[in-house]
Image 1 (cartoon, helix red, strand yellow):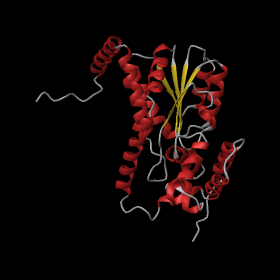
Image 2 (cartoon, one colour):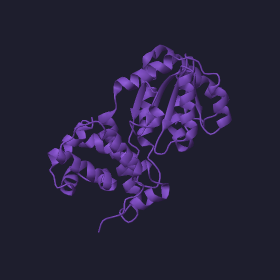
Image 3 (cartoon, one colour):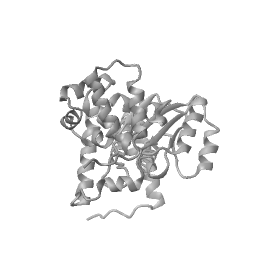
Amino acid sequence: MVQKETNSSSVTEWLDSRVQGRKLAARQMQVIGVLRSQPRLASYGSVSDIAAAASSNASTVTRTAQSLEFKGWADFQFELRSRFLASLSALEIAAEHNGHISSPAQAAVSTDRANLAHLERTLDPDAVHSIAEAIAGARQTLIVAAGSYAIPGKALEHNAIIAGYNVRLLDADVAALTNTLARLTSEDLVIAISLWRVYDSTMRAMEIAHNAGATIASITDSAGSPVAEHAGQRIVVPTEGAGFFPSLTGAVAAVQAIAVELASLDRERSNRNIAASERTWDQMRIMHPRSST
């Protein structure tokens, strides 16, 4: 029984844009036909699965991915699956998992473990270092992230401030976001965090930041995310979850890497500011006293 594909138009449009202008062999076009007509299989199937569906072989599937400017099938499938999941509603994503998980909790942990393994293989240390340097050199750094995407943004804001840098998260308050964007200059850095489906407010913020001449960095789950269009530095993180919502584990790991890199740029400055924060926290008596025993 062939399952009906859901919301495949965005995947099809993306594939068509990648194929356009390229000379692919007939057998490669057979593979493209399978990818277009069966995005669910393309998102989760193995190279052998795709080859069998296209009446082809694994080598042709891999060469097709490489012809579309990916290192291989794994990199291509990661991008395609991100786009496929972005085309689904929360209810449709939940349906993808229904009936296939014996232990949802274990599935969530296993999925995040796989996400972290993927991030470890693909994270570009130079991109992390460049973003950290941009934060250190900026007049101010604004993190634009809405909804649950603000969670990794809050972690980055918190740790960067403790290390002594002027970083601010702009999340739920659109009026505050708008007023702050109005004062952007070319000396500022804007970091966009956008996963799964894109908020229009984030898109508009990036356009305004670009027009103001600000430096832009992005953390997204797709290399082709529209949020990253003007980004000079891009980090792509895996976000596939075991439930109806995207996993934030990869994004949190990425911002923690940025924070660690930032604190290491000028250790004397960081240590001085960390000590000052510790003293102020003690004075404010925010934390429960540590036991002396």
